[in-house]
Image (cartoon, rainbow, N blue to C red; front, side):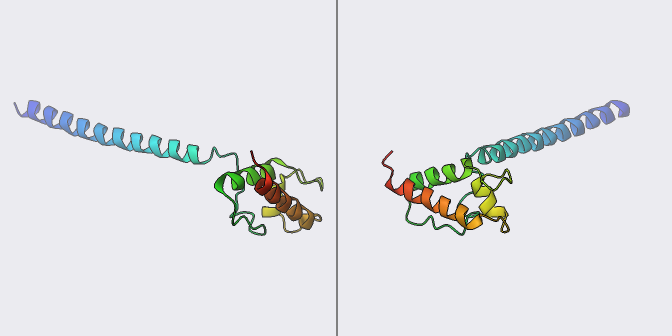
Length: 115
């Protein structure tokens, strides 16, 4: 009889442990999915990354349009970086000021665009 009680107690502990592990795994999956969704934006470098360009006064749609343009354009110095990435991460780019001006032009274009 004592052996049966021990087996039942062990089974209950296993059920409790597996339930907790299941919840932990579910939580990890939910967190991973949430993180993945936040990283799916078409904008790798946003206004916080491109601080040298003023995005204030733009609607969210205009800001998104300008940021998408800056992220999809390429730096023309031959570094292979995207325009927004170059301005954000390479202070020594020989054409950085021109790249900043290009992004400012994209901001102006986003403001005047009606689409």
